[in-house]
Image 1 (cartoon, helix red, strand yellow):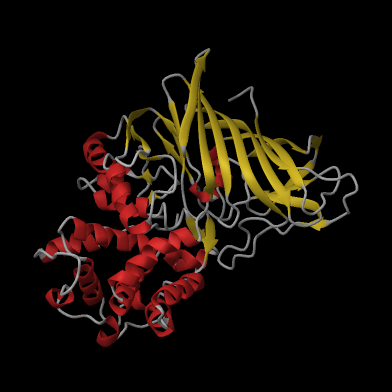
Image 2 (cartoon, rainbow, N blue to C red):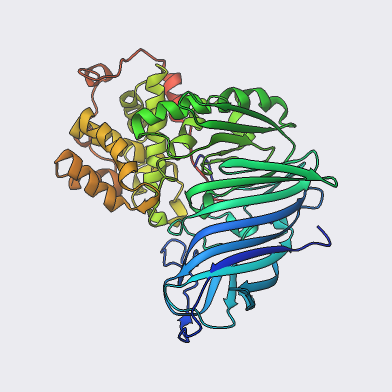
Length: 504
């Protein structure tokens, strides 16, 4: 992620699929959270989702969302009751076709009690009918639904789904998606994956999007508004769909000049991270007042503010790098955020090398020197920063410094083998910082515990010897990267292209 800081006369429904034998035991309630220490109430226990089918109707003028969500899942225990994470108003819930009792609790819990208990290991279908005005809903003091002059956008991290569809909202429970959205003619609905079809009648147009690879809930996105849409195909053959709000004003040109390079950048990144893992590419820039960008799967979200000072290809590199580091391989817990952000930042540094605007080593030296030993920057541990510092700049920059230190320690051959091998090892799944350390040690054949402890856990600035910081020209001896002189201001600009997703 780059910076962080769901119509009158109709109803919306969400369906969760769960099939159970009539002889199911009485069971116990599923946990109201998956046990993530950073966000104990996020996600739910007792079931695993395989697919979300969301059939929605949205009225931009009123921000009213109605729809039916069908969720296919399988129980992981005998269940008497289970939760979904959701904020909008629910009118009906059905479990395996039968009406179920439901209530709300806490900030965002929808508690569902099926007519009959559910047996462990059984497929289940849950249908939830709901409606509401997403922008009117807040949880924990914030909203992840952003109004625009011509519609709305659901995009945030680590939570965004609650505002527009019921879910098991934690990266550990990935699923595939069908998102079908009905909007007034002249308005478009943008979501993840491929646009399967559109149809129009009686003044309304329906857009049907599909994501056919596992996707974390926070990576699902919906944007409704009036967009200029460009289409194409990357050199490697992946379809590209980009969208820009028609009313971006002065930022329009810079946004297009940056995001239109998506196919080129994804192909370039595949040289470092392996083949692009999805069948769709793109990005979208709605007219929001947010300040961040987000790696929404296959189609990143960009705030116009990312382009306020001109083209910003580096942020596109950052969000596309997340398609491997964060999307393809997702965090096991939110404390593992370094695997997302440190690697996406390092991809920006590699792009700088590619563009002859400063090598990764030069940028690492610059960042290291920019933070004196008493800077609080060094007190944040990228491998476990705490929820209050989850998107701190140190997770990005100190996280990238850790990767440069690893590269220095094991050499380019092993380092780039790790960068490409890691996404393949845990493709479409989840992994932790500990998993990465173990993998790096396996590939390099080196004991790297001390190096990772120094750079990822110690609340102090590593010594000069630990940083292995030397003159850039000496660094480049034997390197496959050709260095060109760059002005310090250029280094500063690149180093400051920040990727920080500032919470709420």
